[in-house]
View 1 (cartoon, rainbow, N blue to C red):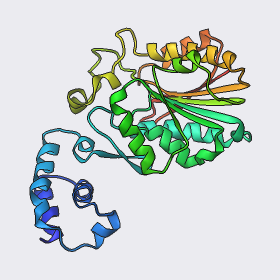
View 2 (view 1 turned 90 degrees about the horizontal axis):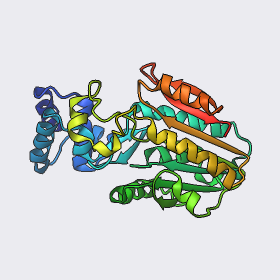
View 3 (view 1 turned 180 degrees about the horizontal axis):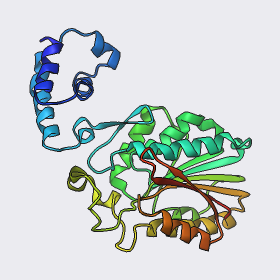
Amino acid sequence: MLKSIFFQIARDSYLQDDVTERILMALTWMTRESLFLAEDIHPSHLYSFQKYIHDIKNGIPEAYILWEQEFFWRRFYVNNTTLIPRPETELLVEVLRNLCCENANMNQSSYIDVGTGTGCILASILLELHPLRFFSIYWVDIDQHILWLTQKNLDRYKLWVTWLIDGSLIFPFLEKKYSFWKHLYLSANLPYIRIGDKSNMWENVIKYEPPSALYWWVKNGFELYEKLIHQCYILKKMYNLESLHVCIEIGYDQYEYSSHFLKGLWLRFEFFQDIHTIQRVIYITGF
């Protein structure tokens, strides 16, 4: 069956060609280059192709249909128990990567990714820097149902030098001794939307993405980060670290609150704007 027929079916449903391309790549397991060169697609894929189009038109996120999402120029497996990686979060990777590149003592540094989820932040950092540059690498998540997916993404890119810690925030490192050296880098993209605050969210996000990965408390959504930052003080003292560097992603309306909170703790911090000019990432040090 001519490939052009598949594209025409999608155009008749007002789908863009790049979406059609991703659907066909998922169905046929072709690379983008192989799909470009192919003239025909086996007709056995037609039914699934039309179902995918129907689901996308009904608002189901494309990533949950194809079980994949692009992040930082790489593809990661996702499912409906995980948050879909977003372009805004790529800023967190850029900021942390640049900080690490400025450090001449990376072989004396460890790295923790908190609330790992799909593992896209963790994997992207390690692939940008090379995992062997770190003395030790850990990833933490409280949801045991998604750990296999995280591991699948790490295996996909042959990142076999990491250690999984099952638990909440960095509490497991305070409860039991782990191997760190002089410096520690920590990334976190935790739930930060206030419960009930749906006015600035897309309908398909509210309907399909897991609430546990989106919402936290009714006060302001920053409470998990407050707890994490207080734990960081204890961690630095407990392991006698020379430096602790934290990068977190925050909500669109948390700039003023987070700034006031961090100033109250006499921490040093810097904000970074995302592609929508929202203060999205905070780099924190001075613990």
